[in-house]
Length: 288
Image 1 (cartoon, rainbow, N blue to C red):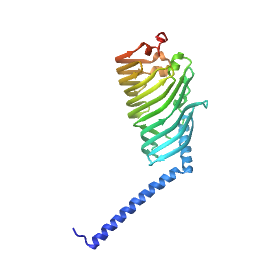
Image 2 (image 1 turned 45 degrees about the horizontal axis):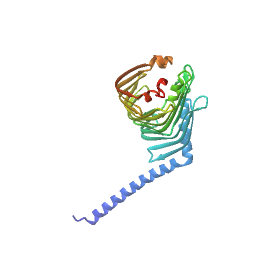
Image 3 (image 1 turned 30 degrees about the vertical axis):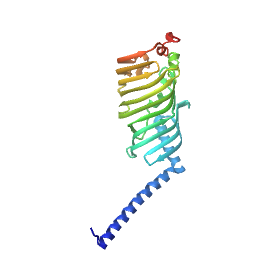
Image 4 (image 1 turned 90 degrees about the vertical axis):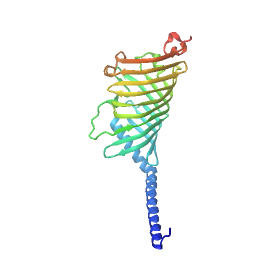
């Protein structure tokens, strides 16, 4: 095939135009990335994020630094939430967000994944009807529309969890001191704050009383104060469990704050527990 001089010039011109367009697009992306990395812009973003969270939750929120990667990944470093007594409620070394879509006018943020690195969570009962996080769920008057969030995946890496309640047995408080927590939730369908479901791909932790959960997975759903787990498999050093389903009805419990009103329905397939494994939960078996 032989091209005329005129056709050759046209092709060369088209190629030059394409190169210019691509160069401009790369320049815009690079400029936006550099702007987002500037300290002034980061300070403004941190101030906006912390003020919005504080206004919507009532918590004191601090973020040390924010980083961006390819405009769709945002990492918040050294994130701190306090309770109303200014004690630590949550601290995480980093929150990593992979963004699917962000609609500022609709105040909507959809994430493909949320990863929380090295979080430390401290929960305690304040009185007969309140915990140190209860204020997060209290009704607050606001003239602005709240933000809407949704996630497809949530992962926690190397977390710690501390729970203390003077009204429950001390051995249960000890059991609820968890460390080395790895949690992976996938395929999350978020209808609302009171209706969501997904797959518990992995849960691992070490308890303060010596119990180590080495593996757990299941399907889960939360709707109208009812937690439903299906296809449950769990494994520890001295026990294993398989169950078709576990249903926890929490409506009366949440209303009256009474553990005796917690409804439990378990369809068990297999439970293997050694005497040493039972000793983690029953003092009579310790030392056997």
